[in-house]
Image (cartoon, rainbow, N blue to C red):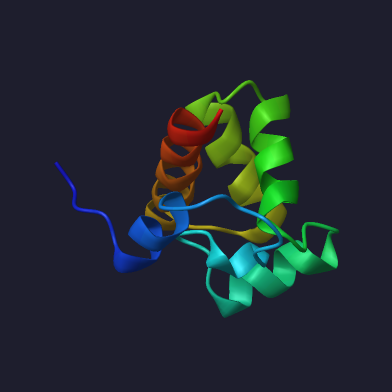
Length: 90
């Protein structure tokens, strides 16, 4: 079982609001910039894509890889962060 990062814990602890995209676990400055350039400037916009893909792990990870070049760990961290947030708030 992998442990979650402090960034993950902070993100899932409260409503998303207007958090920037790089507040998501697995999304740092470089990936955040790539996502912003494609219109995904806020965490809630990435959440929207996550929900459009029906919270499907493989589809979301593939989308993240294709959209910003996220590696396997970054994909896993971001997916886990959004899934846990949804479980708590939706």
